[in-house]
Length: 500
Image 1 (cartoon, helix red, strand yellow):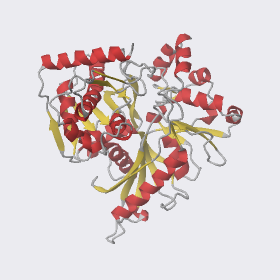
Image 2 (tube, rainbow, N blue to C red):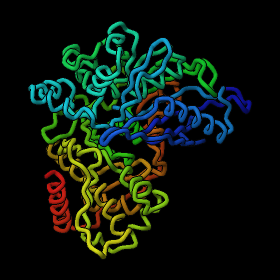
Image 3 (cartoon, helix red, strand yellow):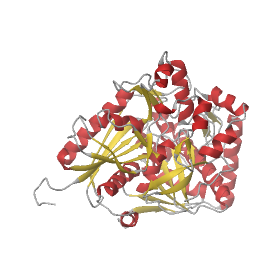
Image 4 (tube, one colour):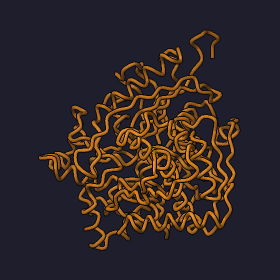
């Protein structure tokens, strides 16, 4: 490289999340040079339904890119490569000629296809789907969302059969937009969340597509996580020709950002939901305890798999306290408010706003707050919320420990809510697990950036990336086993009550 002020090259990563888009720019030493976040509107047209306007998503990406470039004072011509991470199961269909979505994006939290999933289970289909995809028949995943759009938007099913319609999760949609409508691809981590990809062959499964009546011609090409997916073309604020060299679902990108490349590595991302991934190596583990098997990384011809457990409502519960109940003005206030009381005052909160995930898989359950008395105040509810976030994760960790026949002793944490020290200590206490939090908790964006840097030649191998030094803060359990088990029993009773 030359020595001029504009000769240095950088990586730009887009983390397109459920409530907003974060764009980061890093240099060749993985140092953060800029970060910008733009939120967008959440739409709830009916109880249990969650939608996004795809143009709102795209506009948030465009704005965040512009803001990150402005903050960094880096010229767009200095961007060597782009990496994409995304909210995974959120699904949309668009017209190939115009790029216009035929219906709003149906968000991963959406439960409208619960009855359809139940009908498939009653028809004895779940064992086949679980064997081939590692997933369960739940509205969470993309396949039944695709079917719903094809069934409910007039004329679209016929157009899909003719090849005029394209399906994508948000990664595919952004790639289409960034490439000027020239590229229709996805990666194996996102494809593994659709109920349509065979987990062992990493190809779309004709039998599963037939059961869900999804035309295979609408599906994108499945690719490894690192490689040239395409290049920018007529994208706002970016010159043509920048290679898009990495794509991954947000949770897998976070695992990569935590350098979870080895069997046994585990991370928990505290975002809108909380998601734990445990690297299981080159063989998928079939869970007997409600976890799903998924692709962790597809790179250099090798595949690593993960067990995953998700709690659908994590940071979203804090947002509800802010926006719904208005007992806090900003999400960051919850730590101080929860610290203002010695205990939860007997309040139990089950934040099942979108059903329950691992290990319950009950889409019909709704949220529950119990144990209220006249002495309960804002602080008690705030603390009960942090406890609920942690307790959901304990359920997942214990299910994973059963699946691998051994305890999980350490957990790397990231995501916006992980900056809450009280929450992290509660999580460590209730799980009995040591937590490690990196200085930069935006690990999803970092993971996408590191992947893109690998694709651009900034780093030559996973081993080289693993040598990048990252400062971490450690949280050690301070609660005894007896007290922990007593607390978990109270939680189990609240869960049982919610499911009645």
